[in-house]
Structures are given as C-alpha cells and as structure tokens.
Length: 440
Ligand SMILES: Cc1cc2nc3c(=O)[nH]c(=O)nc-3n(C[C@H](O)[C@H](O)[C@H](O)COP(=O)(O)O)c2cc1C
Image (cartoon, rainbow, N blue to C red; front, side, top):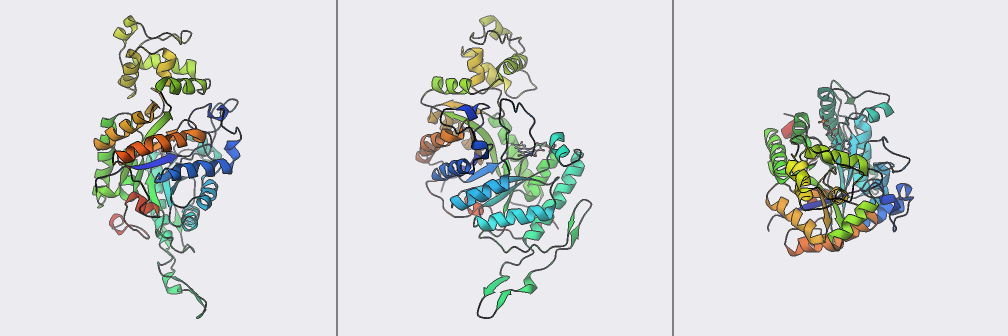
C-alpha cells in the first residue's frame, strides 16, 4: 500500500483558533466550560476518521481576558475522559508537563485514560518553558539542562510504572478466587537526580499496552528527548524545507537512540478556514480576528522592512512599497507574506491570509488545503498534520466533509480506521514498560 498521511485535530479552548471564534454566529459562547461541545467536536473529527485529537496544555492565562478566551482546556484529562466515553476510535493525545507533575501522577492518569479509552491514549510529554506556568506552581522556570534532565527521568519512570503491572497479571478468576498474579506486579524502586518512585502502579495494561509518547519542542535537547522516547512529534514549520529538515533531524535522533527512524512520526501544524471561495474565508477571518489588527499590521511592516500605516488597512501595498520590501531573515513567514502582498491584496486581507499566524494557514476551498497537505506529504516533509480549525463548531465539519474526501480520492488518507488503538492508527510498535533500546 502507498504511504498515507496521519491527521490529528487540535482541540483547545472549545471555540477554535480565531480570537473571536467565541462570538461566531453558530457558536455557544459558553463552550469554554461545555463538555457537550468538546464531545461534539471530537465526534465530528472521528466521523472524518481522523487519527487523533491533540490537546495542548499550559495551565495559565496571559492574554486579553477582557476580550478573548483562554487558549487551553479547563483540564485536558477531564476533557478526554468525557470524550473517551462518547467516541470509540479516535486517538486522544493530551499534553502533560514533565516539570510540574510527579511521575506517579502522570503514570496513573494517563494509564487510567488509556484503559478507559481501550488503548487510544497518547501523552505529549513537554518540559514547559513559561514563567507564568511556573508561577502557578510556586516555581521558576529551570534551565534547559535541568528541565530536560528531569524530563528524561520522568518519562523513564512513567514507562517503568506503566510496565510494573505485568501483561498477564490480572486474572480476575472468580472460580479460583485469584484476582491477580502478585508475582507479576513489582515495585520499580527507581530514583534519579530529580524524581523517584517506588511503585508499582496498580493499573493493568490497556488494549495497546500503555500510552504512546509524543513530544513538542525544537531545541537540541528536545530532539534528543524525542529521539529516545517519542513516537509522535507535534511540530511547527512554515515551509516545506523547514519541515523536511526538522523531520530528518528527529528521525536521525531516533536512529542515534537505537530505534528505527520510521517509528517517529512528525506532524506539522496547519490552520484552516475552509469556505466556498477565498473572499468568504477572508471575510470570516476578518470578522473574528478580534483586536489584533493594528499590532499585526505594524509587525507585518517590520518583517517586510516597511513602515505600514494601520490607519489605511484597506489599501494594497503600492508598487513603490513592494519594490522596497525586504523580507526579514529573522522570520520564516516573511517571504510568504511578501508573496501574498504582491498579489495586490489590501493590508487587512494580507493579514487575513494568516501570514503571521503560528502555523501555515489555508483560507479558501477545501481543494487548497488538500493541495497544501499533498505537497508537504509528497515532499517527505511530514508524516501528517495536526489541523487547527478556525472555529470548531463548523470548521471541523468543513474539513471532514471538504478536505477528507479529496485526500481519500487521491489515495492519501485512509477511508476507515484499520485498528482500534492509537498505536495501530500511528503504526508504532508495541511497547510495555521502558524501551530497552534507550536505557542500555
Ligand atoms: C507545536 C508545538 C506545540 C507545543 N505545545 C506545548 C504545550 O501544549 N504545552 C507546553 O507547555 N509547551 C508546548 N510546547 C513548547 C515546548 O514544549 C518547549 O517548551 C518550547 O518549544 C521551548 O523549547 P525548549 O523547552 O526545548 O527550550 C510546544 C512547542 C511546539 C513547537
């Protein structure tokens, strides 16, 4: 069979990636606290056979709370527990900090969710680098070597705890009266410079054994960590070349750790506004972009090497401006921003294309999103994507009903789930306990 892409769906605050998504006509403005809304969005993604949901987390709010909702879920594990009970196939990947959680808590929560979801859980193990998050735990952000030192120990401990209840330990045999085989349930007695645990963890294996580890980060330390433990990388790249280089670096890191590089899948972010035509999409984004316009116009000017006048948002760049523009080497988005500006769009429209958003943005007909995904996938820049729709309430359906069938017709995306577990969806090998190849 030809290689097919793996696609995940971002599930954040209940609204979508546009700051004003909470005010969109079809959206319940209380979706932030509505678990019904989150379940509905998860079910929409599952209808499209998407492989997993990705829930970022960084428990803090630094932003314009007067006008915009927080970015994250109330609690990623509680959300996924609700979603697990109302879905049956889609993978459930939540972010959990290796810095601000005890390994035993992480091991217990993620394995319990894995059992509850019948083997669909993934753990995005990140080190958390924000001072605002640290402050919520009464701490300060540690140096990178300290954060990653603790992350290595934490992941190894968590995986050891997951494996501390043997695969066939649970007998639940009413006739003999044996609940479990105590010989297969052993303490781990592990400790390092940062964390320790005696164990065992008292949770039997799930249908996939134990959760799948993901990572998100781009530093040398992040590469090494992902190379050793991760099966999925939640990535961020603005160009095919950048994504290809990142994917190659993660694969090389996996190889250095003694693993098959194909076990590590790299997913690039993609933000979508799927509409009948581009004008409709740009207008939808302009209406819901909140109060960010003047600031963004000034930043757009900076990365093009021009002073732009936010008071003239509905003028295109003049020929003189375009000829003077110099895309900034410091921002990988600037070449694309100049390309869009050169097409004659107004400053407001250039920004509505998402040229300075956090990930590449596709605005317009479904075929454009499919083309973007095909191009990146066929260039071997990604194993797939994590897609962040502008407004969950109708944006997930627009992706599922518009983009998915095109990818399927092109043979790039599966028509059915082949397995039931996240490991099967991702094509990553079975593992129980720590991977012996990375702890030798
Ligand atoms: C696409 C992407 C998603 C991320 N998601 C999260 C997240 O949900 N929570 C979090 O605390 N950090 C997240 N991070 C941040 C990384 O974990 C990391 O802290 C950051 O990239 C700084 O790199 P360093 O810690 O390797 O120095 C994400 C990073 C990337 C690239």
